[in-house]
Image (cartoon, rainbow, N blue to C red; front, side, top):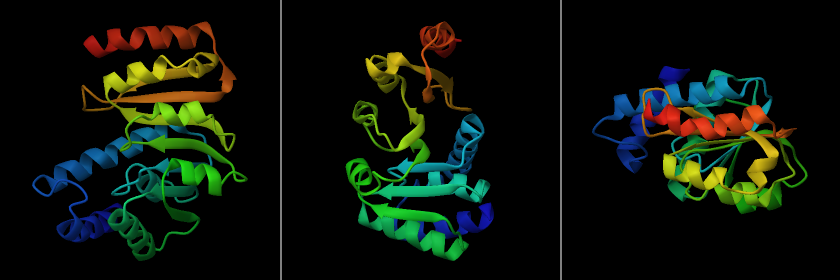
Length: 203
């Protein structure tokens, strides 16, 4: 199904420029491996909401890699929303929805539904999601972001009461996974991980 998704994205990318056209194969391979890393990092879990899903990474790719997961894709841009809807239909996926909107619409419309994790790659100011402290996110958040935003996220007061960790994205020196576990109180190990991420970045 990975190759079928690749073909759908290549075809639609010629119309909408969803990812880089000049280096399509390289970009697809990188985003696919990134999605796989997110999946492996968060396991075990049953459901995710992916904010700003764009071309389908990591949310749609996670669904393809692990079809039993319940997935909600949230995308405000019309062409990308239409692409996601089309890809899901052509791939024959079930137990997956696409919401045309942003995080705040998701928070409003799905306030009575629970998801294990919230993931986000393409949206700026991801710390706003943590400030809202969604009660419908059970286990936590996974943000894919650059080191400047890592700094901002880790400075949030709410972060300090949760376990959190920062991991390098495989093959990218300037990109990181920030994982915030809502279902665990902060501890010395978590503090150590936050303090040491810069040292790991220099290595």
